[in-house]
Length: 178
Image 1 (spheres, rainbow, N blue to C red):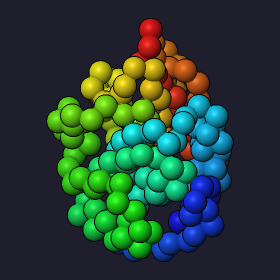
Image 2 (cartoon, rainbow, N blue to C red):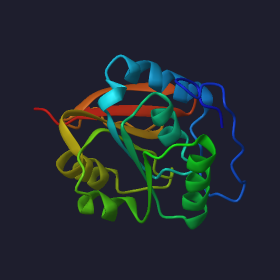
Image 3 (spheres, one colour):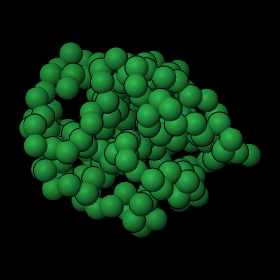
Image 4 (cartoon, rainbow, N blue to C red):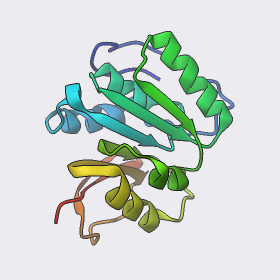
C-alpha cells in the first residue's frame, strides 16, 4: 500500500497478508482522488470509510488533510492493522470501529462529507447499503463513493451522479440531493 497524495505522499506500508481484504490499487486510488480533490475541501472534511479493509482510503484522506475519519470493518485483523497504521503515521483523527458496516451506519451520530464503501465483491445488499448511506450517513450535498466490480451498474439509481472505471474496479458516485 502506498499513499499517493498529501502530507504523507509516497509512504509505503505492507499490510499483513492474513487480512481478508481486496485493497484498492494505487492506480485506481490515484484516479479516485484526482476526482475528489476538485470537489472536496479536505480541511473541513469528515469521512466515513466502510468496509475499510487495510485502511488505505482512510489514511489517504488523512494524508490529504481530512478533519476526521471513521474507519469501519468487521474483521478484527483489519481493525488491529488500521489502529497500528494510525500510530505509525502519527495521526489522532482516525477513529476505528469494529462492526458490520450496515449496522454501524445507522448507529453513528456523525454525518459525513464523504462516505466511501468498498464491500467484498460477493456482497449482495447494495441497494440497502446505498439507501442507508444516503439517508443516515451523509451531510446535505455530500458525496458517496461505492467501489465495486466494473460490471456493476447503478446508473438507474435516482441519486447516481457518475462512475469511473480503473481496470477491474468501478467507482460509482452518488449524492443526496434531489
